[in-house]
Length: 126
Image (cartoon, rainbow, N blue to C red; front, side, top):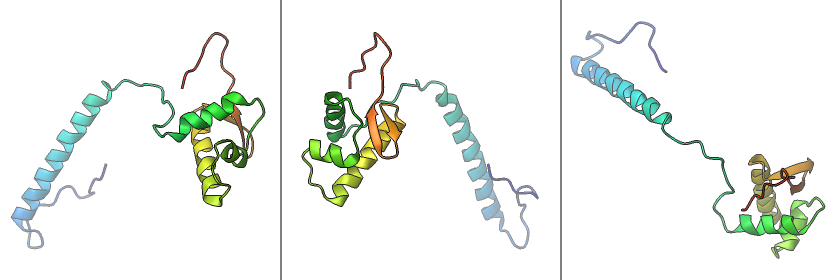
C-alpha cells in the first residue's frame, strides 16, 4: 500500500483544492475496492489446477502414458509428429516444464521428464 509520510496534501499554493479533492476521492475508492476484494477472496473455492486448456497437453500426456522411460523434449516432439525444429522443441519443453510445475510430470534429470507416480487406488484422468 502506498502511503505518503506527511499525510495527504492539503490545499496550498502548490496544490489546487480541486486536485486535493480528487486525491481524497481516489483514496476513498481504493479503500472500498480493497474491502470488496478481501471480502470476495474467501468465497473463491481453491480448486486444484489441472492441465492448461490447449489441444497439445492431452497429446503430450498420452505420449507419457505410452512410455515408462523418461523423455526429453526432442523425443516428445518426435512422438507428437512435430518437426524437429528448434521452435517446436522449445515449445514442447515449455509445455513439459509447465506440466512439471503443476505436479503432473516429474523432472527426473535436467531436461528429462516422466509421468508422476500416482498413489495406489487413485486414477488421475486428464
